[in-house]
Length: 143
Picture 1: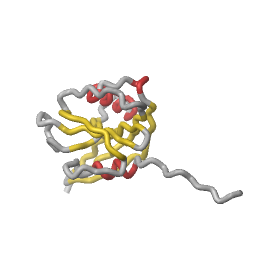
Picture 2: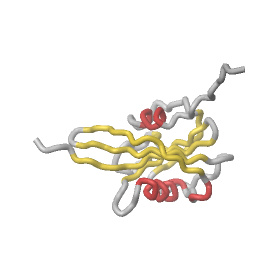
Picture 3: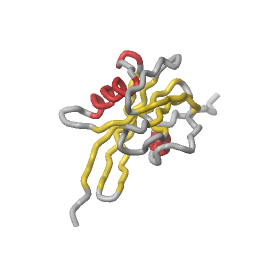
Picture 4: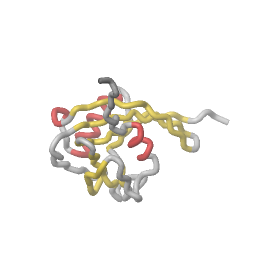
């Protein structure tokens, strides 16, 4: 039995305060058609995960690097038959819900509260949302 193949991908949430922008995958993509997801893409040499996510954000949403603050989250390990996926997570923080200009990979977008999860979503979106959940306010009991 051969060891599983490995693939590195990026997954990026576009956030504005406590809201997240999800995109719906079009009928033209190869997988997870018509399901809500975040911006994703493969990491291919010679690009780093950071470079890959900047490319994907520009391609899939029309957002330029000066329109958001990019924060890197954890790298998630996910498995499927014969494959190990290394998911490099990111948050692109924006303000005032900038216009999103979709390419062929997605056919709609919507803003919703971070805790809201559409029923028709990509199965592993929850893991990305949970990994990049905003930190709750720290309450101090010191006087």
